[in-house]
Image (cartoon, rainbow over all chains, first blue to last red; front, side, top):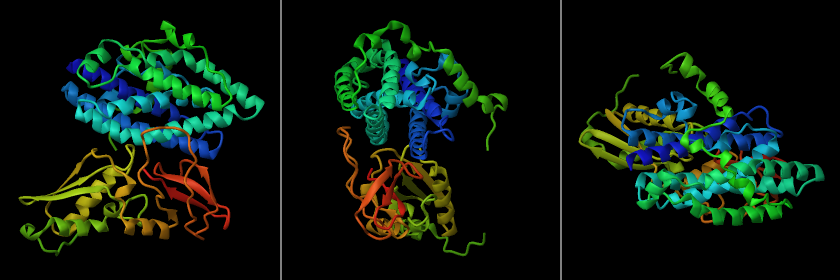
Length: 254
Length: 172
């Protein structure tokens, strides 16, 4: 139970941390100033959430690791984020597609975690959902603007959506960790989020005049494993940059 | 720093401490105090120790550490010897806790205060943003430019009447 809890908290902490790091890469490179500010602020929200999840993970583990030790001193195989969030940013449409599918899932998950039987989890979820509801509305707005935009933007947005779809399945995958925790009401089974996710996503995709990618695209087992520590090479490069200072100068503070 | 304030901790009350905390500004919006912003959740005097409980606005608020240090510094300058700042997450901060004085201070500073009650998180259906009057000329003919402004807690608007862009402190 305790180990399942630790693993699950790492999944939440690592997923928000890695996505935050990815989004931060747009700072100074955004397509327009407004989008750049939105992406940077979303990254900041996610970083704050990552800190809360990782701090709690360290407490649950009970080996004296704090948020910094967990963020800076673990290598890729010890990371437990979903593969979706370690994907490279691609062009801005790719970033929007990734954010859209993530935000809706993140919102639905937090909504359930708010009533977790573990009050520490419930408190963080209640804090985070206010920010994530805003993220979800915003990424839905951008998807509609780009999808229902010019022929060119619509084509590119459709390609991005098709491309990100292979990583959707993992978000709803249950394993021993979620099953153990779901049995005592700490987390929902992720499979149970799927119906509401597809319903909401389909409505926004329709409004964006885009076409829902085929469901089977999301189910390919090759695109799984992040939450068990099997990552793509993209994560290694991300961590190399994020952890550089602590690796080069262990214990550095300022 | 020379401190010549009363040092008898026994006479200090929670209400007095709360009053003193009005001198601690939000580091990013210095016209509003941490009390008026609604992030000071409790003040307790335990024996000779003063425990101030605060809560972050947004999860990633980068000013929390500075706020903690400022609280300690202001209270120590008032002669409170032992100050402890605790951070709580629950219940989550909401703009509903912002005082009327705080809202007026924001407006005077050129930031439109929150227009609605706390954001509804029961659904994420797309919806139009609230109509926000311009803090400069009071015209309601304004439009949203960007859902995020200079900080996570603000959105950027522009007044169609006087032409000025302005920050809107989002209902949260």
